[in-house]
Image 1 (tube, rainbow, N blue to C red):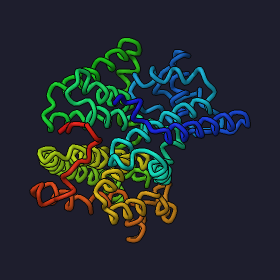
Image 2: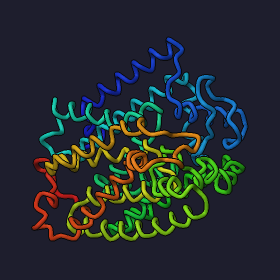
Image 3: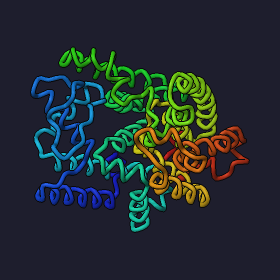
Length: 397
């Protein structure tokens, strides 16, 4: 079954609705898509012959002044957005994100739930998850990159082009580089090599076309763009973020972050290997994604779109309590109950710490459970080790 056929009609309907919304906002002159407007502004800056990493002067008057923080190749790939008004550019990205969302959910659900009204209901339910609605609302590319990784890891194994999608995703936004390590851990050596080749080739193309921006990105903008070393804002739900908030920022937080990141990477590698050996490819992928979110210096809440395949994983295993916890934690209500911005996170109470770091805390609470399950014998883990296949479909493990 081709990738296009794996996008259910419900996702197409959601995509169409988002396009209609974009057109309506364009007609009314209403701003839409803060981050997609930055993508478009960066591409317009290139057309004007200016640097991507200087203050952008081509943004929308209604949008906040934000820097372009992606590698130069992303600026080139965003050039088609300059052909559309900002709102319609958001509409394109939002529609593609809806299709990507439908594809990922489809791949992670059991076959009995992949069609009809039940799939449509589940798809609409995922739109209530804060990482999803925020990613779509901002005009982000998170869902698209996640779909590229899911397709590469779960569908393209054993095919000639396997690995290329991961390499391309990493070239656009560096965080998917951790999935190259996932390919290595699961002994997909050729796929990992193709991923790195795609990553390098795309960056070399950018270096040829935009040599100054390439140098500036790798020497300055990579760290400075998101203020990665001192970002204690609540939106940063990574290990670095929580440590910055707990220690008041500074060198202590950076030292602790480096130490905990090394431990997380080591434990994650062991768990990924065990899950893969037990035939739980989706579980292994989700662990890699979680580790990537934890060890990235900056993981905004909208980066946590990996809760969508996690929801499918829990549904396939009839884990009602896990689903309930996911719905409670990742609906985003708690972030409105604590002070945020202007470094107010540095003076949080104990209750604020629990609510304001809830994504991190949920991941850390789940970690020992995942480790125990990964170490258990597949026969003892029952449904956790089984993958439901479509009729006639062979196992890809």
